[in-house]
Length: 147
Image (cartoon, rainbow, N blue to C red; front, top):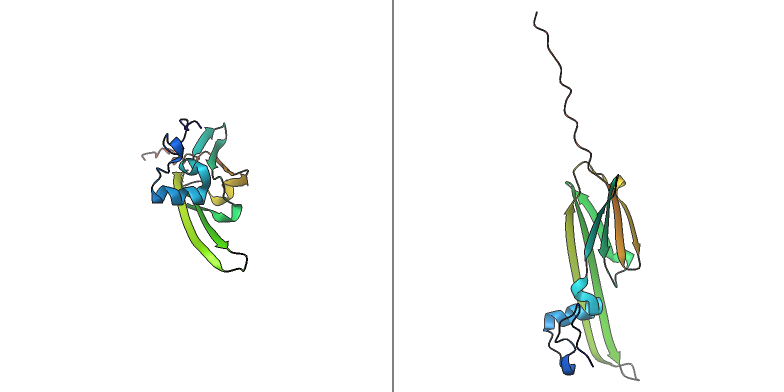
């Protein structure tokens, strides 16, 4: 068995010993082996706007919420996991519940409305397309004639 040295803690798999803390163990149960990489984000610029890609592995579409307020786009994801063990007679031998949430906010501009933001969720990746913020037009310069 080789330790994972690329992207994971070196000691996660070392000799089979669990070196994770309780908190990271809960994250591991909630979000899987890739818990440390949840909500990794890429932003691409195009001629007309931007494409924001957010990794949300293990989440379903109904566990993700998007809000746009005062120019800030907030992405929230909430997930809960229930694990229970039962013997052959149906008695609960072990039962645990985990819940967790995460949030990221991005300033996309005060002139961008919710109708301008297009969202899709596919294969654990949330992709948002939105236009570049339109610059506010300055008032026209007018000349006043002195009489």
